[in-house]
Length: 196
Image (cartoon, rainbow, N blue to C red):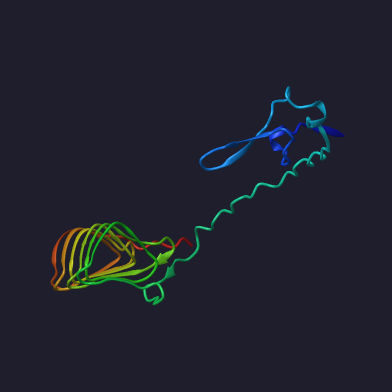
């Protein structure tokens, strides 16, 4: 199959006899005479070009399916994982929420929530200079500084030392209080019963 394509006169690179050149401040362009002014032999002719075949129809590919995750996977204990250890140094102020994948030590100030990643058990330590205004969710929570919010260790452990000042709600499986300034509601989480 052949198709015809018209090539307009301005596309020709060669200059026709009798054409004029118009000068501009920046460029010079050849003036192309109109088709009425050109002799018939100088007019471009239509070219015949081959037309390619149509593309083959697209093959239907299977749609990828997500696999359901097993929710019974055991939690990973990352309370002492050195590679994911984080620290907020004294004098630093962090505003925002953090998702923890390893142990976290707070010596500065945090305005926001600290939450352990799903399927991981982490420990959070609030040092004597540390202040957290927000909720903390971790398997082990040790407070020596100031907290204002929910401390939620689930079935884990909360330790409140004598220099600690805790306000809000404390959810725990085990708790240790060593003379802390405690102005909080305590809520014990019963251990999960194994079904036999």
